[in-house]
Amino acid sequence: MVRHALAGTVGTGWGGPKAGHPARAWFLFGVAVVVGSVLVAPYVLLDVESSRLEVTSELHYALLAAHIFTAMIALVLGPLQFVPALRARRYLHRRLGRCYLFLGVVPSGLVGVPVALLSGRPVTQIGLVIPSVGWLVTAWLAVRAIRRRDVEAHRSWMTRNYALTFLAVTSRILVPLMLLAQIPFAGASTLAASVPSFIPIGQVLGWVVNLVVAEVFIRRRRARSASADVR
Ligand code: HEM
Image (tube, rainbow, N blue to C red):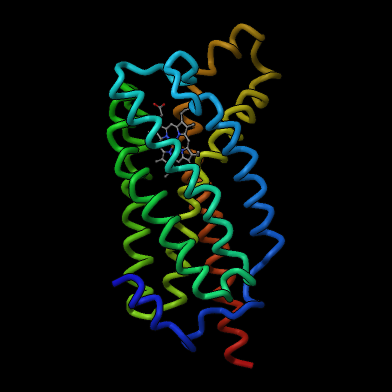
């Protein structure tokens, strides 16, 4: 059904090979590969002893590993969908889009809910169940938009969806930044003690900041295409 819907968008203003920012998309891709590899590395051997996160059971570890491997697929494939030249190859765009959603976002988002709940930390539980569900909802809205051949809405929902995917990167940048900001006010031992409390805050700020940035990009793009239509 998705295939049928995506196939029906020929000539409906899909953006064309020149629409978008290839350098920005390739930059995101590079960051996704590098940061994603660092994040995934401790889990590749499926050795529970190497887990960066404390897990409460084998099931917890299995769910976490499933979340991480599928999330990595989404993190890396996502930026390719914003590269104008690749998007212009419609068959490739459709294939990558299906892999992004059905091997990445959907399984990772579904598993993300129990993983968040198993953390036992209320801020993580609430702060990461919301983007897990948001991941699934924005994916569904993006697919629904393209089924209706509304390319602009599809692109906007996919931008929001990838903003949620990218929380994995932003949250890991924000935590060290928050620690750096504390340096003038706290000693080394206080800093070390505050790391565990900063992690859940970074997890929440990560997706909030990304969604705000995504919204700015979406509005700018809409304003540009509206002024191009007037001319
Ligand atoms: C909407 C997007 C995402 C959500 C909602 C989400 C959710 C979660 C949750 C709930 C945890 C457990 C956190 C804890 O118990 O403190 C977690 C851990 C983790 N996630 Fe995600 N995640 C997302 C995207 C990603 C992506 C794109 C990656 C990239 C590979 C990723 C990699 C990891 C890793 C490696 C961990 C284990 C913690 C660590 O080793 O640092 N996540 N995630």
